[in-house]
Image (cartoon, rainbow, N blue to C red; front, side, top):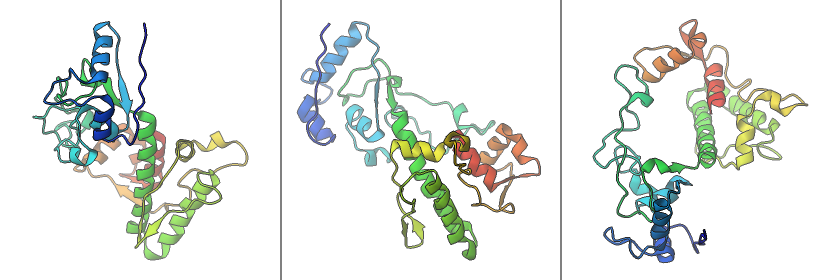
Length: 262
């Protein structure tokens, strides 16, 4: 069997995709080369999956930009039916877990889609790409948490300690530095290998010894008190009861738990 390969010239905007692949107008896919090819493969029994970053997939499947996608209540218009009003913060009313929420997945192929697929679950975010972006944004959030919640005389010290720990992991050479703008941390940018270094276990570095990522950043007195009325703490206590022995979880344990789970 022969397969055709195509190259998209220009940025991955929906306009450029339409110009390269053939525009889909009012659901008429007869002029779209890629849709016809993927439909033919599907008819032959080939299991097709599509992966990429969120902005690209939104353009490919729905013909919309990522900014427009945020206008949907779910923030996930690609996967959920248009009638689904599930919000990112919704949790199950009993278990308080997000994974127990009943979600109405899209069961149609959007009229604007440039590719054919049997079900929307054939379209998936690139996990490697997503993990890098999550690490970047969460590091930024950790830095801003330090700036917002630490006592004034401890902010610079704690942030410098986190930068020192990141430097010892060679996340950025010669030194890791947060981009501070008007008292807050700006965007963090990482490559794939740098994100791996952020999340790695200390013993993976061999010699010389590298401390844990948040070593020295949080004091023993800094803690989060358990509150059963706070959904995330309720779930966290159920999953890791040993970390809440005295009715609280230390900031050091919470930070390390983030790194381990990511």
